[in-house]
Length: 294
Length: 336
Image (tube, rainbow over all chains, first blue to last red; front, side):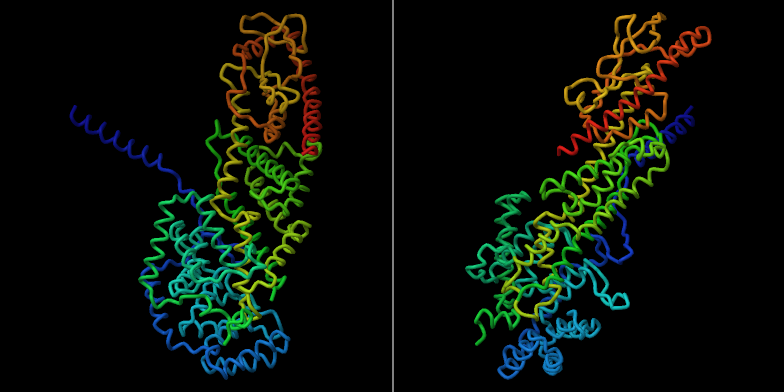
């Protein structure tokens, strides 16, 4: 009798276990797939780096700030640089390439970055391998603008003419490099990071972090010229509009907004060496257009 | 310096590609809710109707400027073509016999429609107008000074704007909600039809409303039986009291034989037209003894003849009914 009771108990517990396992929600999550074009899906992340590691990389990069060689800060180099940009705009590409290469070889990181842009453009000088080479040199020197764009390039990847991946698409690395640049005070990177946090692109969705990064970006961004006061493409307008959407559309509470602003203040206190304004990282042509070139 | 037109084109294209990839992935991974039985006709009917329903939404999206459309408004052109192909006189175009085959074929047709929509979007006037507008917005924008602003920065700026505008929905959570919500609605319609036509103790001979959307909108039964005065009517049937009673076909209804697979397939194939809010909306009067009918056909050939005759005329009526349905709903679609 006792043995039968044991058998029944065992059978019942087995049945219960099977029942419970059958009731578990099926994993409906989308598996990683690649289309024939090689694009991964929206929220697929190949790599995830701990936040502490990314912050450490940002600090290490920021420590090189005083050693950064910028052509915009040296009179002679700046003149040649501006000359190259004028030639570029006038489509005298051979002379442009010569001047930019000469300056880039002298380790001017802003010129190295522009050389990346030069070789990326669709013209007879397009050379994707060369472009990537100069970008990597600039970012290794600790130039946040290069790091930010290196991150963006991971968004869709860079492939050669033959179709091989030179820089594979990786939304995780995209968010990593944008965060590294944002932690150094790059206003563009901070704004983009805010948008990543809202959409969950390459990292976990977090509205408070999003608001905080948009706030930090706003502090570093000049208002648009009067004639573009309502133009949504200007960063400040875009950021403030999105901050309002976070409240109206995404349901951020006033307490959450206060928390985000507190986090922004805390970040400023913890990062006194960060770039304080976009003018410190603007392209030289933008500085000239805004009359900020001395 | 303005952002080059090519960059803007590329940004729009990348967003559309993202929409296409995400939408098709969600469709692939979508599962049907629990069904009353494992009938492949039900499963294929759900995907078949979902595809037509999506096409209907696309064609609506052409005429409205709804920025919350799950599918790009300028991509609806090709989808409308496919939808029109199915929407015209269905008996010539829709192959009802396909219901019952593996439903994956309908899934892949739906994904094909999505691919067509992506390829067609650049042909739309609205697309060109949108890109023109974007180019204007970015012109002389000093945030992008000079030729040394990188293509990636420009690309991301344009894509940011597109995402925030909501014109192209690429957020997978939002897309999942829309697509799976619509799929669930279509599945509920199919299940409601199934349950309405297969009630326990119910009848295989039912009346179906001639103008189903109108019946639904007026709160009338979609499918019904009705006790009627004897002596009139279009068919003869047996009641559970063993008396042969002639029932009148209610006004506005036609006879449907649920044992006819072709008739049922046609019914299922049109489920997308109906907004059935409650499953209990389909009601049937109980007490229609089909067993009696079957067992009595041997001894009462007259009854069998009558039934067969009424079934034939019911089939003819059914054909006419569906043509009427198509014409009435087609008129509605054009009015939209």
